[in-house]
Length: 255
Length: 307
Image (tube, rainbow over the protein chains, first blue to last red):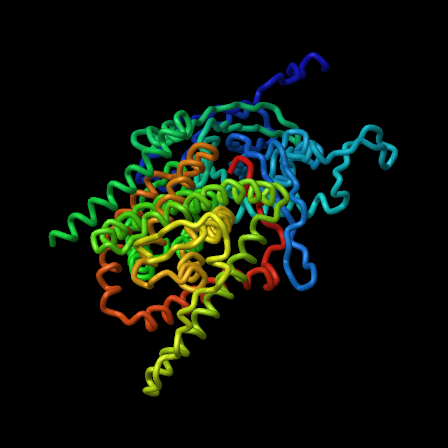
């Protein structure tokens, strides 16, 4: 009887995916871009599989301050720096993340805006809390969560952070697609699309697809000039301004 | 027709920017101010990062001021010597101001200082100009003789050492007051991201008692020098000058400035000053009152690193 059972499945569920665009070119009429990801789930088991698509942009440190009222004036308190916050982050799935995997798994994989692994190293203090040793606790104490949520809220309002529980749609059995909206303000640089496959709350496979957002043409020329030869760039800007001012005054004197 | 700005990294409507440049250029040519205090808030409202807005509009101010200075210069309405003295003080002041502003930004108080300086300086100057110009306008309406202007210049202008002749302004005064005014304006322009014309014009009229005919041209000449310096410093140190943005703005700006310089001949000085006072007051209140209003979101992103 025992020998009739099939061998335990090793990786009978797998996923593969591709981006329809791997290079986003930022030109003068750039408006942000919609990127479509197609993929297929090969699931030979009878256990359901879930796909979670995560797109991360390059890290951008965030400085955030809280406004506090002092004698009628709203002042900024000392800003807090969050390191490791991605400049762009979006999660797409076909049902709520909490149904796909538990809190600990999501946190470990940094899936979901609440589980993004950004922190404030400059302000961290190591202490023992709740019997857990070497726990890094922020200077902000219990306010830490408020700050964290504020970063997510502000980035979400700018279209830079998103979490969409209906973002992965199935076109056909096993064939899915996800759309990622890059806003104009999404940072330039290398992005990574991660396609996670979950089964029974465990990650069974993850695939990565690179994505690059870069400036091309005149945008790139200006950007590089401004950063590589900043002083010459400044002089050129002033010459251009004085020249056009002179030009306009000559034209208007004649007319 | 939207256009992507390579340094600001946002996409904005190009005709709108040209129009904005033109309106601000017109006001600039009309009143002899750089117009930065009008431009910067609008650009920030359009979603351009404040650091880029302030640095790029400085370049627009260079262009529109240059456009009108060439026009005023031909009418011999620029005191180049006075402008150079003011600008020398302005250069020192803007270096000090850039350092002050950098420290304030690191403390996260950049926003507050900008708002408060807009409120205080624009409020006080706008208020003073409004009462003064409305007063003389009303007296003329009632047919009363204009208030006898005390032509005696204050003694301190003459008592100080280092005297210098300013033939265009028909002045023979110490260089210390103009240099100090220049330093003060330089600090303000670095902190508020403006050329400082709205401080300079009243200072030249009421403190230095320069003849009205040369005030506007001289103010603009000084503004060209300080804003050129600001543009180069900002580009060199912070890479925050967006040539695409500046070009769109200055295209409208130089045209607007020419129209403004022409229009200025058609209005009475008092009427012009009433309008300018109202604009200055409104912008000051709009920028400054934000400090007293309970914010919708108690958290703000503090600029100064990366984006």
